Image (cartoon, rainbow, N blue to C red; front, side):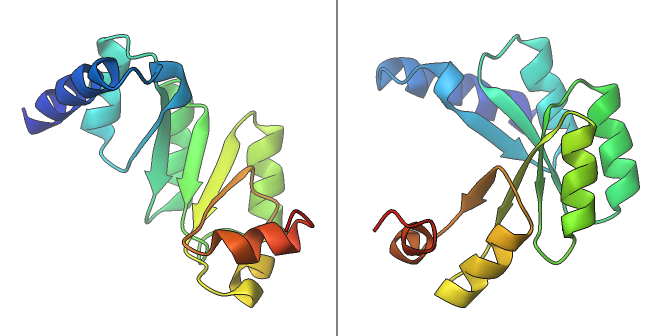
Length: 128
């Protein structure tokens, strides 16, 4: 019940703040929440966060039409990132706080890195 309420409130706030839903990625490890997001035709992009068993998470995401996988760096490898891309997923990872940590994440070839140290990440990307 709380998942539907949370999604409904998110939709309301996006409208109130004049933020296009299409510019939002809703990341959750809750399969119920992502199912509800799909059922109410949410325009925000949905990402399944894999926090445990990788293979079952990939199978579930495929089955439910989820196109983005968010995955802990300790579960992500270069090979897995390549495979996910080949299977049509976008890959999001997170967690680096240092420049060296950001470098390690970049080497995994994700599409998106969530970072609390944006200057370090930008420096590695040559955009400082």
